[in-house]
Length: 477
Ligand SMILES: Cc1ncc(COP(=O)(O)O)c(C=O)c1O
Image (cartoon, rainbow, N blue to C red; front, side, top):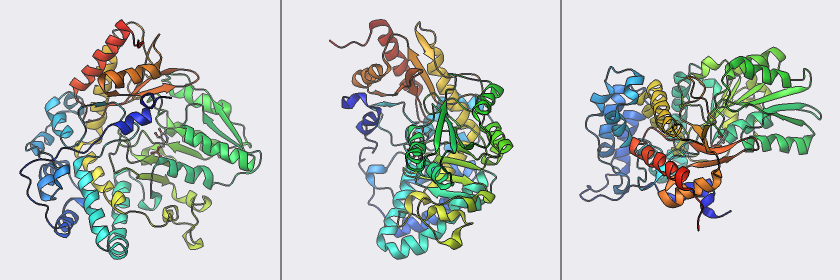
């Protein structure tokens, strides 16, 4: 496969650091800046107004290195205080322009793969850098003795935001780790069956395949229609696959990465409870993308990455596990016996950086500052903007339902007659537009995932490019 036709290579092709600016005062001593940060935004619960005010102060107050500086917007506090409903605000380009200024994205390209991994806002990058600089002054003391205890504050804030107990939240490196803790951690024996769809994430399917090869368990995958927007139909599909006494685990995506399809995981968890089967929810794409609370899902196991839609530092994830289930799940890396009932046993991974984890706080502050409902409404607005424009064209097929509640910012579009992989390469080569080509046995298309910093003009560029492809083709000479 040529480098440019591989979406992962697309991701690697774009830089993110902003340009150096002239006239930037010399950097202040790190400890001063660290101390100020610690006392201000990091550990406090922050209101939206405080957050928006903090953003306009952040670049100067935190002594950013020149390469990370951005002009501070002056009117965010005012903008954030608007009484507009999330739906009305979704189309307010002035507001979203100010939010977009908080990112240091490379605007020479159009990044429509924010589902893969997100850029972190400058506010988050600076906090992480601050913690890293502080750690490096004396790691055993600063990192282990001073910063490590602050992790508890991050745990508490995440739990508080989601209406669950902090003792049910583990901080991990990503969704893969959180999911594998659950998938590997529960005892199964030869012949036991695990159930998932044929649209679940390949690494998670491979996790079961490894158990299959090693322990003789049986992996059963089944097909889900694309798109699907009836709760009962989906729950029935899962129930039809359950073999009472044989099925011992269910893995279910909250939002399918291929199409953005949302599944009714609360009902599927209830189904699992009915049969006594643990249901592991893969929330890699749902968390901080559309507005919900973990407590509302009434689930036992929920795993996510925080570097996707929460915009937290790369290499951060979360595992929610209902308290009563903790003792029965083995950690991936061994922990002391006395930690058996402690969620922190899943964090026993040896020496690791604290900076990433602590800056989750700024990402949460940023998210809460925008507001979950506003973010959801904007992501839907952006999706409808490009999807409805392209649906005017012949040969355009959407593999994602636009009905409320069944998708959010991610959608999958197919141009009939065009190979999706080749179209993705063509968009990159000729327009510097980054999309994700999806080739599933049952459907194909482009996965499009804009983010809160995406401008309508960037979506126009994408729409225009696809129209050219539809009218003139993409075959190279
Ligand atoms: C549905 C789903 N699950 C799990 C993952 C794994 O996420 P990560 O690579 O952040 O661990 C992804 C990544 O895109 C995903 O889409």
